[in-house]
Image (cartoon, rainbow, N blue to C red):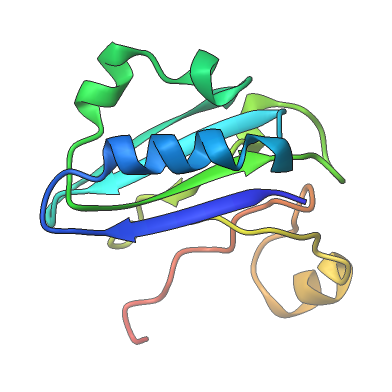
Length: 132
């Protein structure tokens, strides 16, 4: 059980995502994260803890952009490492970010068909090939 929110707007969305995560806090108290996009670049802040503890004013000022996603985590698998806080971000080849709610119950079967082995239920998939 986690909480996920996504907003696309005409102005900065960081405060709206923060407010939504605060309302969704009951769905996960282990970790929180926000990623925003200004059209050219992604800005990410995530860590273990409650929403009010993860995001300070200095963090919110850096989360610029008119679209973004937020996540609060309730761990059902994996560890409580801040590396498992979401949203996840991969910089290659173009940059992609995602948040999910659930467990990879077929991780071993997936590993047979892809070029990496998931280390936990929240492992990020490999980068998207240029041919996609």
